[in-house]
Length: 612
Image (tube, rainbow, N blue to C red; front, side, top):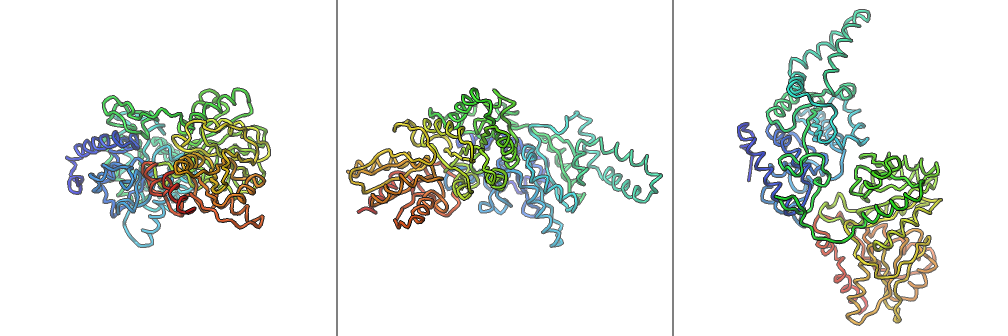
């Protein structure tokens, strides 16, 4: 379904918005996805497409999970059926998918910087094009936003920033009066008056400007966006983000101003679907659900490692008042919400500010506390310098809990947790370890709490471990010590697993056993420091060595082992079943692993071919 002509007809916009809502609900209820953000931003996007041509004036989304309506309005109605499916449509805007998607947008708080870059390019090209950024109020908590706003206020490039305020109001709307003030502030008369006042004030002698300047200050106070005005930006709002007529009026006025403009629009997350309307975090990203009852259709009875982490850390915190922690805008996603509710003075959500969170916990470690930093593997990348400079150099005992490590499935390439071993292993003083199942995760957390002279990071997968039960006896963690789970008499094949890779190795070994092939199995446990004393003789005794880990091959676990052997002058061929040098696309985890050749059956087949 195409809307190129209809979207320009004001009389058809309400019907278009209704069709878009129904389509989003239809598909997301079946396939899962980001529901409430896309429903909440829908009217804003419809109005943007009515006023602007996104092929001329680029739309820049922040974050892209609110952009489903944009996808549907740009020729992807049928393709939307395969949202977030392997080989299908991405859950985020992506230039490879459509020329209407200016930039990829999986992580937050990048839109204003991107829009500013566009505006600079348009200026150099002497073009009248205008970038339009749509940013949520949650993304406004990141420092990158204010770095961009600071420069924009100085440079004054023409661009429009639509602030989608769906959770915390910058100011409380005051019904008809608020709408009237917003339209008044957007009107040419008002903007001309403000501009005229500045010219008059600049020409008046200092002694005559006191009353005039007081009037200007009072004028600015009728706008709740005084912070933006002080940064040198034009502010309009708040407006009703679901009133198409009001949004269109405001966008047109902002377009005419040819200056940097922030439009503050108040919206309701989940708008149009009663079950999801309001501040309900569970409707932000959903698995398939019944459209009528709103009940999830997921039948998984597995205990997620996130829940094990949450419950275990709570038990530890009850006994040890030195344990503190932070997360970055993901309290329920990381399991930190339980601790924040129980001990609100010891556990904090710092919003989308990973770098700040890490540095603040470095100070707490210096003060004798035991900080736990719970952040998704892919989001911790944004705090790399702070890990190096503020934690690593002083070797402070900050505990990094990396949720969503490995293949994450439908969220795709912007969210795959594959880089953490490579980017943390190179940091001096850093300890890296990983549990293989829920039982060893508990032991790993207790071990982490006892580390006193070094930072550490432990990782676990999204959803569940491959080993859902404690199949092997669980030894306590000991610094830098591996665990030998099975030693074959033949000593022909050695499977070395790390973290969730232990479960993969276990199932590979079971397949090989059915073929009459026995293999030794090691849980590496520590990627840094490696157990040189235990690992080296095992590798030398076995003919074929295979490494299994949910990490990138470059800089990964196999590389660490080869570096260890090289330092001892040992030359050994090691085959690594880690992810090759590529950005991994979205799709159901099992389907993505099949594409990568990482299913246990595929690995077992390769091993049989190698040893034949």
